[in-house]
Length: 481
Image (cartoon, rainbow, N blue to C red; front, side, top):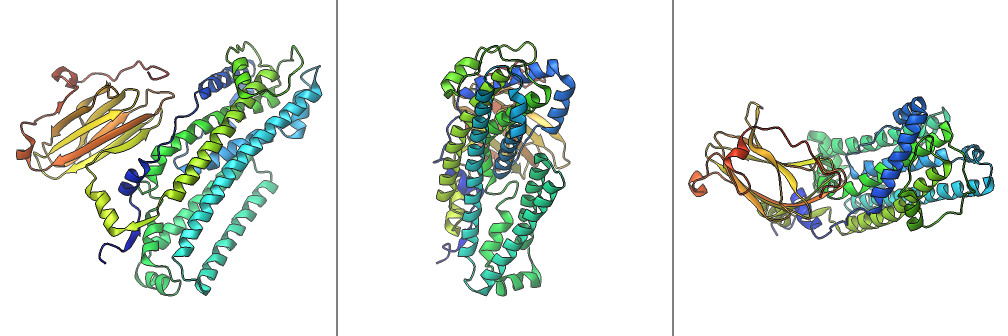
């Protein structure tokens, strides 16, 4: 029947689908652990500024843009941690204390073992995702020599990439070099898929007839990983949870490498056996670093971070695996049309700390009116509206202001003086730790007669004085009340 044919998922469909799969907040213990790791970094920077500059240059800050890139970079930092705790490094670190060398070595090996467990969790999740996508592709391929041919070609390409990684490491490549190459391989896979999906003319005919690739699959592989494609909805909702983990992993890698390279202060007492997370947090919560950090303080903070990371990664891996198992890659054309027809209903978006989120609405005629309505959970948000002319010039139409959208619904409307694009921007850049769960609705009415008396812009939270130009706020609550 018309409308029952399969089409690739759309972002609008996933936006509604994912609203039934909320991810929990990051564990509150991250704040104590990150604060302690910052103190340790500052201690090493005071005592060994040159060495720390080199270490921080090598272990550069990571800002992944995709969920799979986030998982790759978490693996990179975990491998850096293991690299810093190789047997020869453990023996060198243990020499810093006159007492308990065997206990120190045992504890550092235990920490390395926790890092390996975290690594295995992430690696297993990535392999499940590969198997899932491979299964979807095979489902749409004819089960004959053509499927075997494409499978053989893919496996040959994977073997070639693995050999390339092996050659790099045999030539003395670093962990950083290895993961830069692994991510380059991942980007290459995506580009090849897009090229196949964009096939046209005779090549497209050959793909469909000789290789047996149906049109719905060509459409799927062309759009699935676009910057504004369907999986972008998964990134904006669920990647921030992983950003917190990689942020801490980065600090742990720096602190451990600093302890190996710069040395650490002698222990005043014999080190103890590894403790549980609550005991570690209690010990590091009041830590003060004056000069070179002690080895025990480094191990306490790093072990606490890795134990919590293991727990968080187990949850994150289980959540993502279940999410993707329950998420369709193909829907009927009728379902896609229905998701588009409800585009003016409420949408949800999770805004990561230190970031912004924007949506646009194009207007074709002067006098068109755009309206908005939104709420946040638990905390306020910055909001502003811009208008972009066809020339590219960008004008602020509703001035930036932090609004208490967690206490009341914020709504307003604005009239277009000319054709162009309205840009609605929610700003969480002042928040250092807190994500903002935004529920919003935007709409446009091209017939000005339907808009009542709307003119320059009305907003339930703004007065005329608020629209006058003024600098952005300079104060921000670090914990984002």
